[in-house]
Amino acid sequence: MTVGGHRRSFPTRWADNDVYGHLNNTIYYAAMDSTINSWMIDNGLLDIESGAVLGVCAASSCRFAASASFPDALSLELSVGRLGNTSVTWTLAISRERDGLVLASGEFVHVFVDRETRRPVPIPVDLRAAIVEQLEVAA
Amino acid sequence: MTVGGHRRSFPTRWADNDVYGHLNNTIYYAAMDSTINSWMIDNGLLDIESGAVLGVCAASSCRFAASASFPDALSLELSVGRLGNTSVTWTLAISRERDGLVLASGEFVHVFVDRETRRPVPIPVDLRAAIVEQLEVAA
Amino acid sequence: MTVGGHRRSFPTRWADNDVYGHLNNTIYYAAMDSTINSWMIDNGLLDIESGAVLGVCAASSCRFAASASFPDALSLELSVGRLGNTSVTWTLAISRERDGLVLASGEFVHVFVDRETRRPVPIPVDLRAAIVEQLEVAA
Amino acid sequence: MTVGGHRRSFPTRWADNDVYGHLNNTIYYAAMDSTINSWMIDNGLLDIESGAVLGVCAASSCRFAASASFPDALSLELSVGRLGNTSVTWTLAISRERDGLVLASGEFVHVFVDRETRRPVPIPVDLRAAIVEQLEVAA
Image (cartoon, rainbow over all chains, first blue to last red; front, side, top):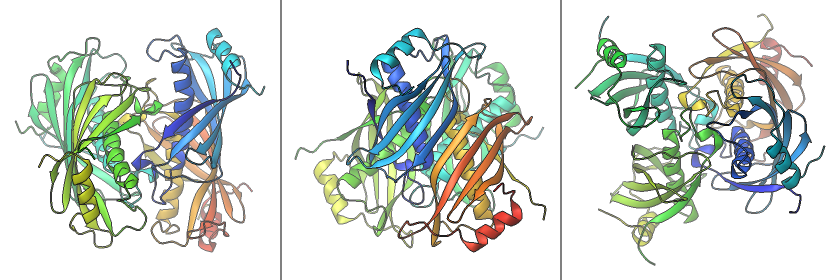
């Protein structure tokens, strides 16, 4: 398998536009969150209801370069900026799907915790393997 | 205790406004949902994490009379249109908090179900008692 | 062109799930809103920024038959329940995209108003024509 | 007037909780956005519909220390990390209203632009004056 980014489409909704006629900034975080979690779920790496380990958001950030509007879809490319022991720093390049206009770049830090104690635990082995195998990892 | 409605303030958010500069219609449903659930939680009638009975939404509706905008707060008055065996039809009168302008009226039907089987069960006894004691019940 | 429904996919988001692990009820209204407006925009029938006529939501309702969860996508089929003089009652059949499970059926009443006065005006001629040509109209 | 932070309550909503029973991370950005914009609106510094200058989000970030859940309200304290020529870096300390538990700290960079050209313009004089007069400014 080629090691590279994982790309996902994120269609927008009527109510995502704010009074200025553009997607509200919070939508980009929803797009990041959904892209990361759906990649994990699609790969069988996250069992929301009963998995012993949860990924919780420890930090996130986004820089905005241009704006988009419903009904545009966003396109997100997922890679990994840093693969730690108990945390992953996901990086997301966000563009407008119809023409590739660069819109934003974001980071999202997941710390993996025990569902019960909510204390950090090592990244699950299968998740670490899938990251290394499928995604570009910077560090 | 006087039998009457339960009133709750629902502040709005910047992103609640849509491109026309008014609260998007979905916000009124979020306001109803939050008013009903917070009334139950504040009265110790809903244990989200481990209660044996959940209220699930079987139907909802809203009629809109006027519009409001962030930073307006909504004011919701909760009463009960129909108190059934396994379901409650909540009715909500929604106005603009600063001047009482009537904005909308809504209905929200909760069916109570067993958390595991998700099959309907009788309305919990303490919830039924609180409704009768605290809220106006039409039927 | 065959007169029939208009079908649209509505992918869900991580945050759409509520504490019970299912899509929150407000998401179905966002799905209806987005389906109707995107159909109008895609057909050049709604100019959000400068069109003289806006569609505002006068009433909406939804009945829920089953639940779905992120990362499921919804599938919405749009038709028209009533085509009035100044209003359209849209009807939406909502199912789970991956297996067609019937989830909900909704109604959404748009009243068309003048952007400035916000008073009702006749449905624009091109919109009426597109509805009759492309969508199933019950009455 | 004492120069200090501006504090605002941000009540949460039922649907803000995600499947893990805590506020979704995007809610904190909505809270920041609403606090900043409502401070400007309450001070007559932002005319959403027709003001010549808009504040657009150029970057944002948040670090999370603990989690909260509906029906908790958040409490946000607004100050300014950097007051530039065309941009303001707002800083927000976010705690749980009922007990002051520190939840998160965020930054939100507004660049002020001309409504028509969307090109950066100097921060409006009255906004700059209000910031200096009412808020704590770090740099």
